[in-house]
Length: 157
Image (cartoon, rainbow, N blue to C red; front, side):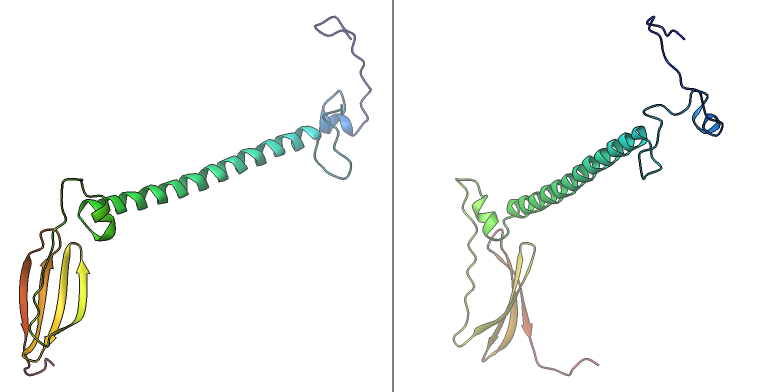
């Protein structure tokens, strides 16, 4: 039989069982299963391509997840720096701007027993011979926002 290019093509006669499974022409080079496997070379080639594409997608997904984590972490640190939090806030401050300085005068014999930071507010618990109190400072302005005197009284149930 002659194909489109004018070249003569040789055909092998199909065996009785092969004609139904592989077509009327019988198994050719790409249609014959590889030895020891039920897969043809075309199927193996397709499987290799699919595995390679899935590997690339897996690596791309991992890179995307790590990038988003780094981006969000950097953005959160930038937000904190913009509000003047911690050392990062002082480092990110514009050149002409000075950080607020908060001074807390303690009475004679007083000592700081605890501190708690919430955003740009700092609560300082002070114990003195006269009693205890809590001072709340605004770290952005350096001002004292509130003073709470702690008194002894009946315990709450």
